[in-house]
Amino acid sequence: MKILVCGKGGAGKSATSVLLAKKIAETGTVYVLDADESNRLLSKTFGVEAPDTLGNFFGGRKLLKQGIGEHEKIRLSELPGDYLKLTEDGIRFASVGKIEEFGEGCACPYGFLSKELLKRIVLDEGEHLIVDTEAGVEHLGRGIEEGIDAIVVVVDPTAEGVAIAKLLYTEAARINKPLHIVINKMTDELIPILKDMLGKEGLRESATIRYDPIVFRSGLEGRQLEANEAMKGVETLTSLLFPK
Picture 1: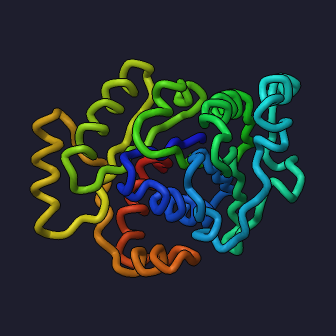
Picture 2: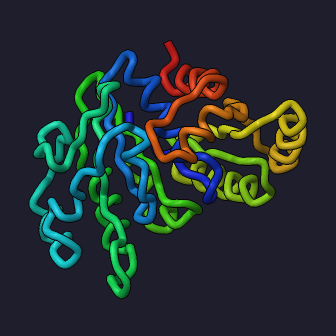
């Protein structure tokens, strides 16, 4: 299964991607694709150094179209070790590309590469792919959702988070892709408020991830992500994505 994790900036989509990968890795093979051109430390949350980018693997910004066009099918397991890092949890981590310097140009080539990768990546039985997207809905305009099987939208307790969830819900229905709404950073006080806001938009959460100080502490320190209370909501999400 190919799973796209998205949401507004700061909603917690990267943390959700990490924890979801850890949970799925307990019973299957998981690849995580970092498709956020500005995220600098996602690899650190998995406890590994950043791999070389797939943008470089396919020839760099100027040769991406030609490079990816030479591959009708792609198996991530066949990538050289410089482009695929293995975590202590057995998760395989890859990165599409990053903006590195002033005047480099827009991130459009990496958006193109993400879309083409997801159409070409072949998963064997028992393999799963989690794609951590850039903040907001730019991936929607790029059509990245075309090559995935399910969408997870992470909503923090903000009106903007709800608005983005509504847009993604509408578009997911239009392109016939299942979507799961995860409300994140929740407290007893915030849960009924956010549920009511979603309800007024015709939306309903699939899973609730509670505020977890362990997640925030490890994220603040820029190290391998740890969690306690938050894993309960991730377990609920996993059971919905992979019903028995």
